[in-house]
Length: 294
Image (tube, rainbow, N blue to C red; front, side, top):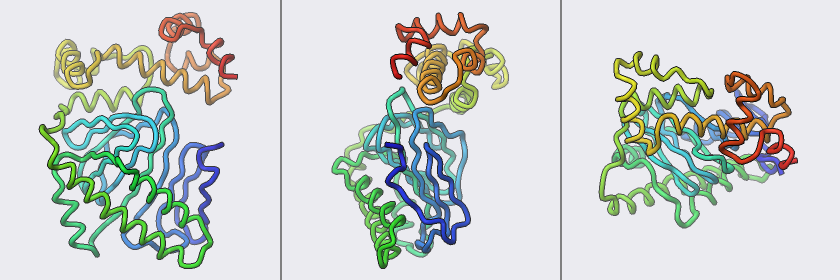
Protein backbone atom coordinates (compact mmCIF):
# COMPACT_ATOMS: atom_id res chain seq x y z
CA UNK A 1 0.00 0.00 0.00
CA UNK A 2 1.36 3.44 -0.91
CA UNK A 3 1.85 5.84 2.02
CA UNK A 4 -1.14 8.07 1.24
CA UNK A 5 -3.45 5.57 -0.44
CA UNK A 6 -6.11 6.20 2.21
CA UNK A 7 -5.56 9.97 2.47
CA UNK A 8 -7.80 11.85 0.04
CA UNK A 9 -7.86 15.64 0.21
CA UNK A 10 -10.19 17.73 -1.93
CA UNK A 11 -8.38 20.48 -3.86
CA UNK A 12 -11.37 22.81 -3.90
CA UNK A 13 -10.33 26.31 -2.85
CA UNK A 14 -6.75 25.44 -2.00
CA UNK A 15 -3.91 27.84 -2.59
CA UNK A 16 -1.26 25.15 -2.23
CA UNK A 17 -1.18 21.38 -2.12
CA UNK A 18 1.82 19.09 -2.39
CA UNK A 19 1.13 15.41 -2.87
CA UNK A 20 3.61 12.79 -3.97
CA UNK A 21 4.24 9.16 -3.18
CA UNK A 22 6.34 10.21 -0.18
CA UNK A 23 4.87 13.47 1.11
CA UNK A 24 1.52 15.14 1.49
CA UNK A 25 1.18 18.77 2.54
CA UNK A 26 -1.87 21.00 2.43
CA UNK A 27 -1.80 24.75 3.14
CA UNK A 28 -4.75 27.00 3.92
CA UNK A 29 -7.34 27.48 2.71
CA UNK A 30 -8.55 23.90 2.83
CA UNK A 31 -11.96 23.10 1.36
CA UNK A 32 -13.06 24.74 4.60
CA UNK A 33 -11.12 27.04 6.89
CA UNK A 34 -9.81 25.68 10.17
CA UNK A 35 -9.22 28.48 12.65
CA UNK A 36 -5.59 28.63 13.81
CA UNK A 37 -4.27 25.89 11.47
CA UNK A 38 -1.89 27.10 8.73
CA UNK A 39 -0.85 23.80 7.18
CA UNK A 40 -0.85 20.08 7.82
CA UNK A 41 1.34 17.40 6.32
CA UNK A 42 2.70 13.86 6.38
CA UNK A 43 6.23 12.80 5.46
CA UNK A 44 6.87 9.15 4.65
CA UNK A 45 10.42 8.36 3.54
CA UNK A 46 13.59 6.96 5.07
CA UNK A 47 15.94 9.73 3.97
CA UNK A 48 13.89 12.66 5.29
CA UNK A 49 15.92 15.66 6.41
CA UNK A 50 15.16 19.33 6.97
CA UNK A 51 17.83 22.04 7.10
CA UNK A 52 18.03 24.82 9.68
CA UNK A 53 15.06 27.23 9.53
CA UNK A 54 12.48 29.00 11.68
CA UNK A 55 8.80 30.08 11.53
CA UNK A 56 6.66 32.91 12.83
CA UNK A 57 4.20 30.32 14.16
CA UNK A 58 4.12 27.15 16.26
CA UNK A 59 4.90 23.82 14.61
CA UNK A 60 4.08 20.42 16.03
CA UNK A 61 5.65 17.22 14.69
CA UNK A 62 4.67 13.66 15.63
CA UNK A 63 6.81 10.61 14.80
CA UNK A 64 4.43 7.81 13.83
CA UNK A 65 7.17 5.42 12.64
CA UNK A 66 10.98 5.24 12.87
CA UNK A 67 13.48 7.38 14.73
CA UNK A 68 15.71 10.41 14.17
CA UNK A 69 17.18 13.51 15.76
CA UNK A 70 16.05 17.09 16.04
CA UNK A 71 17.76 20.25 17.22
CA UNK A 72 15.81 23.26 18.47
CA UNK A 73 17.84 26.40 19.09
CA UNK A 74 20.94 25.03 20.85
CA UNK A 75 19.47 21.75 22.11
CA UNK A 76 19.67 18.26 20.62
CA UNK A 77 16.86 15.73 20.98
CA UNK A 78 16.61 12.08 19.97
CA UNK A 79 13.14 11.20 18.72
CA UNK A 80 11.50 7.89 17.95
CA UNK A 81 8.11 6.33 17.27
CA UNK A 82 5.50 7.86 19.55
CA UNK A 83 7.41 11.09 20.23
CA UNK A 84 6.11 14.56 19.54
CA UNK A 85 8.15 17.74 19.44
CA UNK A 86 7.14 21.37 19.38
CA UNK A 87 8.86 24.48 18.06
CA UNK A 88 7.77 27.96 19.09
CA UNK A 89 7.78 31.06 16.86
CA UNK A 90 11.34 32.15 16.10
CA UNK A 91 13.05 28.96 17.28
CA UNK A 92 15.69 27.73 14.83
CA UNK A 93 15.38 24.01 14.18
CA UNK A 94 16.54 21.19 11.92
CA UNK A 95 16.34 17.42 11.91
CA UNK A 96 16.80 14.15 10.08
CA UNK A 97 16.05 10.44 10.11
CA UNK A 98 18.42 8.12 11.99
CA UNK A 99 18.83 4.61 10.61
CA UNK A 100 17.10 2.95 7.68
CA UNK A 101 13.81 1.75 9.13
CA UNK A 102 10.51 3.11 7.75
CA UNK A 103 9.84 6.69 8.83
CA UNK A 104 6.53 8.55 9.04
CA UNK A 105 6.07 12.07 10.41
CA UNK A 106 2.91 14.16 10.88
CA UNK A 107 3.36 17.93 11.10
CA UNK A 108 1.06 20.88 11.85
CA UNK A 109 1.71 24.61 11.61
CA UNK A 110 -0.61 26.79 13.69
CA UNK A 111 -1.15 30.14 15.40
CA UNK A 112 -2.99 30.78 18.66
CA UNK A 113 -3.62 34.55 18.67
CA UNK A 114 -7.34 33.96 19.09
CA UNK A 115 -6.81 31.53 21.97
CA UNK A 116 -4.64 33.49 24.36
CA UNK A 117 -4.80 31.05 27.26
CA UNK A 118 -3.51 28.22 25.05
CA UNK A 119 -0.93 30.48 23.44
CA UNK A 120 0.44 31.51 26.85
CA UNK A 121 0.56 27.88 27.98
CA UNK A 122 2.51 26.81 24.89
CA UNK A 123 4.96 29.69 25.26
CA UNK A 124 5.51 28.73 28.90
CA UNK A 125 6.67 25.22 28.04
CA UNK A 126 10.32 24.87 28.98
CA UNK A 127 13.37 23.73 27.05
CA UNK A 128 12.15 20.12 27.01
CA UNK A 129 10.49 20.29 23.60
CA UNK A 130 9.86 16.56 23.21
CA UNK A 131 7.47 14.18 24.92
CA UNK A 132 6.12 10.72 24.19
CA UNK A 133 2.52 9.89 23.33
CA UNK A 134 2.41 6.81 25.56
CA UNK A 135 -1.36 6.33 25.31
CA UNK A 136 -1.57 6.96 21.56
CA UNK A 137 -3.90 9.94 21.99
CA UNK A 138 -2.03 12.27 19.60
CA UNK A 139 -1.65 9.60 16.91
CA UNK A 140 -5.38 8.87 17.00
CA UNK A 141 -6.31 12.55 16.76
CA UNK A 142 -3.85 13.12 13.88
CA UNK A 143 -5.51 10.34 11.91
CA UNK A 144 -8.99 11.67 12.69
CA UNK A 145 -8.08 15.19 11.53
CA UNK A 146 -6.81 13.92 8.18
CA UNK A 147 -9.84 11.67 7.86
CA UNK A 148 -12.26 14.57 8.34
CA UNK A 149 -10.37 16.95 6.05
CA UNK A 150 -10.59 14.39 3.28
CA UNK A 151 -14.23 13.47 3.84
CA UNK A 152 -17.47 14.78 2.40
CA UNK A 153 -19.36 14.33 5.68
CA UNK A 154 -21.61 17.09 6.88
CA UNK A 155 -19.96 19.51 9.32
CA UNK A 156 -16.56 17.96 8.65
CA UNK A 157 -14.92 21.35 9.29
CA UNK A 158 -16.35 21.61 12.77
CA UNK A 159 -15.41 18.00 13.53
CA UNK A 160 -11.82 18.45 12.34
CA UNK A 161 -11.50 21.69 14.31
CA UNK A 162 -12.82 19.91 17.39
CA UNK A 163 -10.23 17.16 17.01
CA UNK A 164 -7.49 19.76 16.57
CA UNK A 165 -8.53 21.54 19.76
CA UNK A 166 -8.51 18.22 21.61
CA UNK A 167 -5.04 17.55 20.28
CA UNK A 168 -3.69 20.93 21.46
CA UNK A 169 -5.03 20.42 24.98
CA UNK A 170 -3.87 16.78 25.05
CA UNK A 171 -0.37 17.85 24.03
CA UNK A 172 -0.22 20.47 26.78
CA UNK A 173 -1.25 17.87 29.35
CA UNK A 174 1.37 15.42 28.09
CA UNK A 175 4.11 18.05 28.34
CA UNK A 176 2.95 19.20 31.75
CA UNK A 177 2.89 15.63 33.08
CA UNK A 178 6.37 14.96 31.72
CA UNK A 179 7.87 18.21 33.05
CA UNK A 180 7.91 16.85 36.60
CA UNK A 181 9.92 13.78 35.59
CA UNK A 182 12.80 15.52 33.77
CA UNK A 183 15.99 15.31 35.83
CA UNK A 184 18.41 17.10 33.52
CA UNK A 185 18.45 19.53 30.62
CA UNK A 186 18.73 18.25 27.04
CA UNK A 187 22.13 18.28 25.35
CA UNK A 188 23.25 21.73 24.26
CA UNK A 189 24.39 21.44 20.65
CA UNK A 190 27.21 23.81 19.57
CA UNK A 191 26.70 25.93 16.47
CA UNK A 192 29.51 24.25 14.55
CA UNK A 193 28.05 20.77 15.13
CA UNK A 194 24.68 21.98 13.86
CA UNK A 195 26.37 23.42 10.77
CA UNK A 196 28.18 20.14 10.13
CA UNK A 197 24.93 18.16 10.42
CA UNK A 198 23.19 20.49 7.99
CA UNK A 199 26.06 20.19 5.51
CA UNK A 200 26.29 16.39 5.72
CA UNK A 201 22.57 15.86 5.19
CA UNK A 202 22.37 18.36 2.33
CA UNK A 203 25.43 16.85 0.61
CA UNK A 204 25.45 13.10 1.19
CA UNK A 205 28.68 11.88 -0.40
CA UNK A 206 31.60 9.59 0.36
CA UNK A 207 34.34 12.19 -0.04
CA UNK A 208 33.65 15.04 2.37
CA UNK A 209 36.18 17.86 2.65
CA UNK A 210 35.92 18.01 6.41
CA UNK A 211 39.20 19.88 6.77
CA UNK A 212 37.80 22.77 4.73
CA UNK A 213 34.52 22.59 6.65
CA UNK A 214 36.37 22.90 9.96
CA UNK A 215 38.50 25.73 8.56
CA UNK A 216 35.38 27.66 7.49
CA UNK A 217 34.25 27.56 11.13
CA UNK A 218 37.68 28.65 12.41
CA UNK A 219 38.29 25.48 14.40
CA UNK A 220 40.74 22.63 13.91
CA UNK A 221 39.70 19.35 12.34
CA UNK A 222 40.70 17.44 15.48
CA UNK A 223 38.55 19.73 17.64
CA UNK A 224 35.61 19.24 15.27
CA UNK A 225 36.04 15.45 15.45
CA UNK A 226 36.08 15.52 19.26
CA UNK A 227 33.05 17.78 19.52
CA UNK A 228 31.03 15.78 17.00
CA UNK A 229 31.66 12.48 18.78
CA UNK A 230 30.92 14.06 22.15
CA UNK A 231 27.49 15.29 21.11
CA UNK A 232 26.39 12.77 18.46
CA UNK A 233 27.81 9.66 20.11
CA UNK A 234 29.70 8.47 17.01
CA UNK A 235 32.75 9.70 15.14
CA UNK A 236 32.36 12.07 12.22
CA UNK A 237 33.70 9.47 9.80
CA UNK A 238 31.29 6.85 11.11
CA UNK A 239 28.37 9.26 10.66
CA UNK A 240 29.39 10.04 7.06
CA UNK A 241 29.70 6.34 6.22
CA UNK A 242 26.33 5.63 7.78
CA UNK A 243 24.68 8.38 5.70
CA UNK A 244 26.23 6.98 2.50
CA UNK A 245 25.07 3.44 3.26
CA UNK A 246 21.55 4.56 4.18
CA UNK A 247 21.23 6.75 1.07
CA UNK A 248 22.63 4.00 -1.18
CA UNK A 249 20.16 1.45 0.23
CA UNK A 250 17.32 3.91 -0.26
CA UNK A 251 18.17 4.54 -3.93
CA UNK A 252 18.68 0.83 -4.57
CA UNK A 253 15.24 0.10 -3.08
CA UNK A 254 13.22 3.04 -4.32
CA UNK A 255 14.71 3.93 -7.71
CA UNK A 256 15.58 2.22 -10.97
CA UNK A 257 18.89 4.06 -11.25
CA UNK A 258 21.89 1.92 -12.16
CA UNK A 259 24.47 1.01 -9.55
CA UNK A 260 26.98 3.07 -11.54
CA UNK A 261 24.72 6.14 -11.35
CA UNK A 262 24.24 5.74 -7.61
CA UNK A 263 28.01 5.42 -7.12
CA UNK A 264 28.51 8.65 -9.07
CA UNK A 265 25.85 10.51 -7.06
CA UNK A 266 27.63 9.54 -3.85
CA UNK A 267 30.93 10.64 -5.45
CA UNK A 268 32.76 7.32 -5.33
CA UNK A 269 35.80 7.09 -7.59
CA UNK A 270 34.41 4.03 -9.37
CA UNK A 271 31.66 1.45 -9.19
CA UNK A 272 34.30 -1.00 -7.95
CA UNK A 273 35.15 1.22 -4.97
CA UNK A 274 31.46 1.71 -4.22
CA UNK A 275 30.78 -2.05 -4.37
CA UNK A 276 33.64 -2.84 -1.99
CA UNK A 277 32.44 -0.13 0.43
CA UNK A 278 28.82 -1.31 0.29
CA UNK A 279 29.69 -4.98 0.76
CA UNK A 280 31.98 -4.19 3.67
CA UNK A 281 29.12 -2.69 5.68
CA UNK A 282 26.18 -4.80 4.47
CA UNK A 283 27.73 -8.13 3.62
CA UNK A 284 26.47 -8.12 0.02
CA UNK A 285 27.19 -6.15 -3.15
CA UNK A 286 24.79 -3.40 -4.31
CA UNK A 287 23.50 -5.59 -7.15
CA UNK A 288 22.84 -8.55 -4.84
CA UNK A 289 21.13 -6.24 -2.35
CA UNK A 290 18.75 -5.01 -5.06
CA UNK A 291 18.15 -8.54 -6.37
CA UNK A 292 17.26 -9.76 -2.88
CA UNK A 293 14.67 -7.01 -2.56
CA UNK A 294 13.15 -7.91 -5.90
